[in-house]
Length: 310
Image (cartoon, one colour):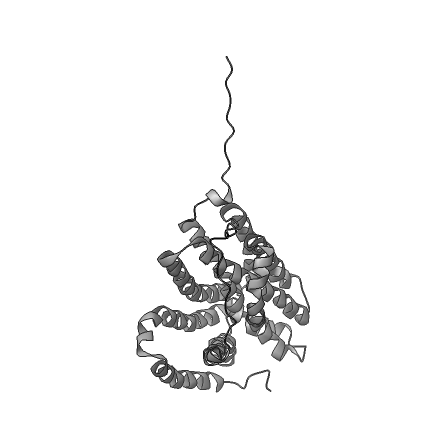
């Protein structure tokens, strides 16, 4: 008598079913761009002291913080085409490994210029990661489920800024280089993507989307201008608060991180409550936030003249 041993069947990508595990992983990956933007903020005074012998340090140190976001903005328009050409999952894994490689590079780099250059690499990786994560959410989910995950992506990205700023301050108490170890998390996420995510099936002829019309840029000028202003406002406290606190005698990175986290908490609460506040209309909201923001920025700036302007 013979017994046939059946081999386990492997599920193809088209047979897999997306669920909360995939959605949660994509939201977590989306938070990596926030980590790149705010993690090092509390360590700025320490980095400036480390490279105080370099005259260019006064304007290069802020670039360590802002360069990744600058690269994301510059690459945003062409990122989608690269994602479609290379493939979501392949590009995601490559970008996460790049994120870990360039993100941890300052652990052994001694030149401030080379550290800023490594941050360019982090920004390029972040642009691809964010585009892949958002595209995969749109690919995996539909209707209300898709809208819910996209909304959670915004909420958790805002809340993660509070965590990352506080964590960066705590880690920087031992050394300004210590927070850079967190970028190694890209390796863990790359492995998770390889196991838990899959390349969406190519659409059939019946599912192919109709040809999109050319983008009309003129109606977008006002929203893009407001977004640019909002980005500048977002980075003012991230860059300026550590210096302002340092100038009034608060030198510990842990304390700087705690105060900066409170500012980030306000941003997160604003993002979460925008769904209800948005009913007041854009004109009222602009008037309501402009004066308090101007006062807060002027008070912060009154403690010091920006170092890269002096």
